[in-house]
Image 1 (cartoon, rainbow, N blue to C red):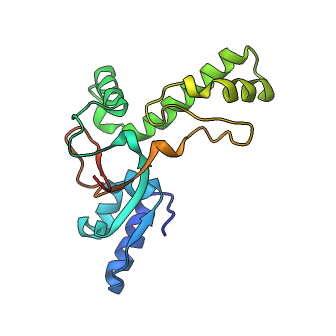
Image 2: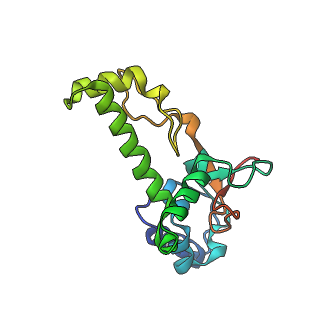
Image 3: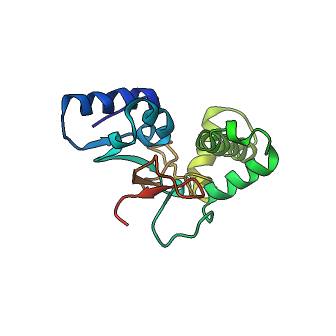
Length: 174
């Protein structure tokens, strides 16, 4: 089980695993797959053999899923149209994290009609399920959890260095 903070961290861990000849399977957090470019620079593409990690369902695909059809794919298209000259410098997954956070915050504050924490939390508990998102849709909140990301929004991904033409990675098990 690997929990890393950056793609470089993942790269060094996977490189060390290879150098030691330690042929174990690796299960990781979303950083393990979200920053594959940095990982591959350090460890090489072969280091992703027997590696899977959690990611959002909307940034993964199964073989029969249409190219560009997810909310993540649509966000990437809007981002490219907004700033095509600098698009290659963006990290669309990071943009999606921020995008969802800002829109959930906006909806909660407008819905609660005040900026205090208890009012915001109460509104989210009652209404989070009606909010869409790029990564996690619908959101989920309750009296006991304000995590907002439902387990249905998370899947395991593999081979993150081999992205489909729309930038999505293969979902495990399909």
